[in-house]
Length: 254
Image (cartoon, rainbow, N blue to C red):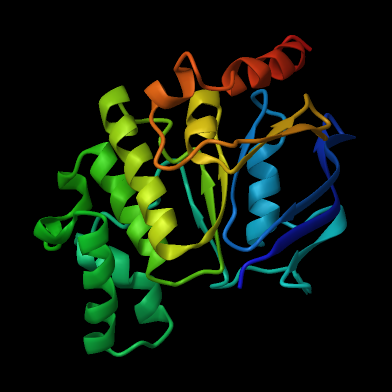
């Protein structure tokens, strides 16, 4: 299961010796199997919220719950995929994907069985023995996603994983990400600065306000999967992107 809840999450940082409030009471409920995207102006606290959810940072106030139980530190139930991938350049692709399984003490034969399934899903099988420095940025992100999925987390947390990709690679991975979500039925929370990306992927899109962030508005995206850019910008499609941008513009100007 993977029902995720945040209750009154607040976060303060010190700035010039004074407390700076970044998150102002984030209340969020993500149902098991939902794909929720978060957009907001730069520096508003999107990544901070994701890191708190992953247990990489502690909130100043509030709690994170998974299936009704309070969670604090990191754990295999919540795995984060970073913008840069955070791969080990001295390990080949398969060893990178299996790293968490190895740390967890899974025997080699079982590790290979699990990793091969996700290498195939991410179209990485032929690159299994390649080192990550030999791969394109897009291929590195495939490896990072596979490494997260092999741990079978209840919740997958993704922090702008496609931000550094060229448009063609991003469009391809957007389609593949939808197929992976449909196959694995994972709960996903996905942070992005790209509104179109959020509308293509999300069952819901949340708009964070300027710092200190609150959830300014939620949008239910009632479009069938799989989606493409053409689907969300078509004449007969609801104007989700325009409505979300209308909510974002005043926050960016602050």
